[in-house]
Image (cartoon, rainbow, N blue to C red; front, side, top):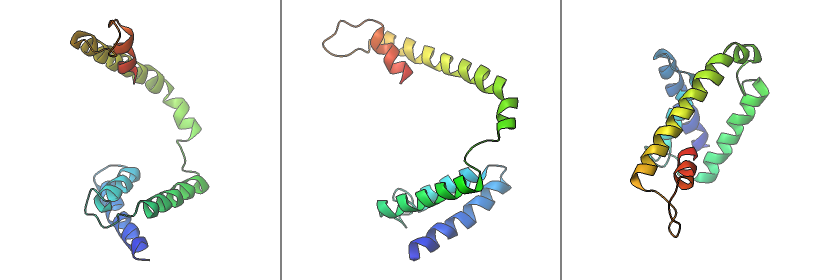
Amino acid sequence: MINSFIYLSAAVIAVPLCRMLGLGAIIGYLGAGIAIGPWGLGLVTNVEDILHFAGIRRGADAVSGRSGPEPGRLWSLRRAIFGWECAQMAACVALIFVACYALGVWIPGTFGGWKTPLVAALA
């Protein structure tokens, strides 16, 4: 019972605060979870309770239809998603690959090469 009060109180405080700052409600929920969790204030430390409430929240999102972006909005953002996001991913992979290759990152017992830095960059 007390955990329910803690979760709801944290959400009621964090979500409107994030909305006032121009951030989304999801950021508020994440911030509330971090604040009250074991690595924050430590108000909730039982992992089973945390997973239980996370499941309830995800179920509520699915029932209310908020499990993802609207298809029309997603279609209007297709160029940004598949264009710029793919370019960002490719640039990050390239930079990490070059750094790993320059530092000589490879699996012990092999003779180096380009495969291990590529796998590290893709990961």
